Each structure stands twice: as C-alpha cells, then as structure tokens.
Length: 273
Image (cartoon, rainbow, N blue to C red; front, side):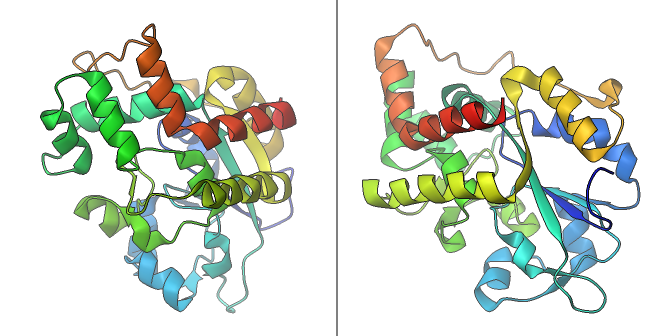
C-alpha cells in the first residue's frame, strides 16, 4: 500500500459511475478487510445512519481497511478502532458526466428490480413522454445534483428519500435518490464549494467513468494493488427507455437537473486528469 499503515480507505460510491466495477476489480486485495454496506451494517449493528449521524454514535471498524457505500462524505467522523480512537481515513471516488449519470440512474430505477411505489416509478407512469417525466424529476428533486450533495456531506440525511431496502442498509444515495426539499441556488452553491473543498483536501483519488482504464491504472498504483478485469461488469438494460439527447428540450432539462454537478465535474476533470 502506498499509504499510511492501517489507513482506512472509504470509497464514496456515487451511483452509476462505474464504481462497482472498480471495487470488484480490486476487492480481492482486501479480502477479509473489506466492508460493503450490508456486511458493514451486520458487523456494526447500526442500521439507521440518520440516527447515527444525529446522535454521533461511534462504530467499531477495527480490522477493516476498505469500505464502499452509497453514503455521503463525512462518515469517517464516526469510525473508530478497538480503543475508541477515530480511524485515520482517506477517501476515493469515481465521477461521471452528470447528464449521462442521471439518465443511467433513471433507467436503472425503471428496469432493474423496479419498485412500483418509488417516486421515480410513480412519476414515470403518470408522464405522457420522456420530457414530461424528466421535468417531474427536476421539479421534485429526483437525481438532481447528486454528486454535489453526496461529496459535500451537507445534505441533512433525513431529507433523503429512499426505499425500505435502501434505508435498511444505509444506501441513502443509491440510484433512487430523492431530496425532500428543493434547495435554493445559494444552498446549492454552498454544496458545490464544500464538495470542491472535500475533493481537494480529503480525497486520495478521483477517477472517471469515461476514462475508466486510465483511472484504474492510477487507482491500483495509488493503493499498491492488482486489477482483476474478470470481475468488472457493465449493467445493460435493453428494455430501458431511451432518452433522445439529440432533442434540445431533453438536453436542457437534464442540464438543469445537474447545474451544479456539471460545474463540479468540470472542476474535478481539471484537477484530477
């Protein structure tokens, strides 16, 4: 490992950024010391992350050197060793072009184990066309500026809407992410600036879905580990709705959904490539 001894690597898993492939590819290097969300909840006996962060519980993660979850930046503050001391942590993450990421997340929600009573599915059923559906997502803060929110760690977790299954495992920023509130431009600008600060000061590595092979090479070098390409995968949903990005109105509404993520993505590209 090209990092301090006993460093706990925390992967901020942003949905639909190829992070799953990256993690599966290097997971064997951390066998026995790796925690996914479900396994981590079992070993910590803490299922309610909202309560955890509200009450500042401490979670013993002694013996774990790598974690990957759909959780926001900031969870390092609650992770301790057997002596109750805060673990020394370093973050990594993968990003993706915001428009492509959002549309991929929505297709995932509609086709991969769809949950009929989820907000995404309900709005899709009520919409007459894809444009109307995307407008509903924009108006109801579904999959909007997710990278900014997750990387800033500034969103109150009780403002995140998710399914019972996601909530049980702490997956507050999965593909079905929805915010309970419509944030002001000032609030979102603050999320953006804090997310930039966190990337600059707490992240050891930032990769990009569009530059996956190059990013994996850099990640393996950073962590001193080997890549197993056979473990990587792609989610393909042939029956998923097609969002025609040749239509200006579709591009416009998805861009509006990601106004601040677009700025963050551009900033990260300049900083990390």
